[in-house]
Amino acid sequence: MYNKELRKNGWKVFRFWEHEIKKNPESYIKKLKSYMEKKIIFFNYKSLSKH
Image (tube, rainbow, N blue to C red; front, side):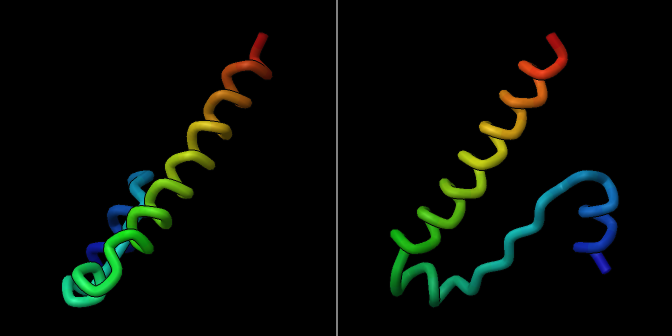
């Protein structure tokens, strides 16, 4: 329910289990970093295409 509301308002929801993060934190850092890099490229493209 909360996820649907957040997504409806433009948020990206990530859900990770604490014990999984503790086992392999680098994996989750890579996932988040990859998502953020894709967003930065997308926003840069959108801002450049307006000119």
